[in-house]
Length: 150
Image 1 (tube, helix red, strand yellow):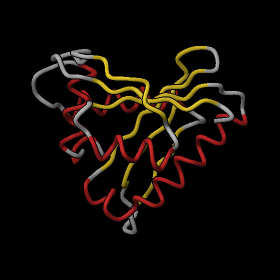
Image 2 (cartoon, rainbow, N blue to C red):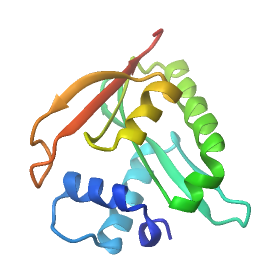
Image 3 (cartoon, rainbow, N blue to C red):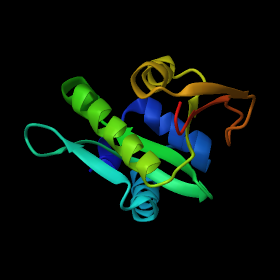
Image 4 (cartoon, one colour):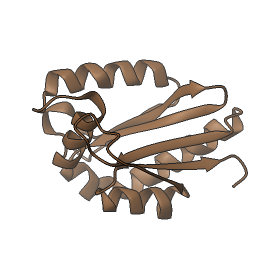
């Protein structure tokens, strides 16, 4: 369901990470199912008042003590549930650090300024830098992290 109504900026990000020229809900749904499976038990879904998903996200292990974040959401979901998404994300971050994670990381297209502001202000992430032309189609990707104890 989320893949069908994913925010445009997140569709652009999927294309930058996975490659391709046109957004495909089927390809995205497959990637989300895989991400959920590798993130469990560090994945969650925030629901809207009507019971439909507002967003889903989690952290995938990418190395010893290192976890990479992913999250997708809808326009209405973010508008209605941004506080719940922030609280749920902070809770998940706390759970990972309590379980022994030493580094949590996230990335975004460098022009996704609202997402970047949320990473820094709401989740306590620090900028690690921008990797020029790292995206599959030449997009600049901004990287952020948070260390245990920071």
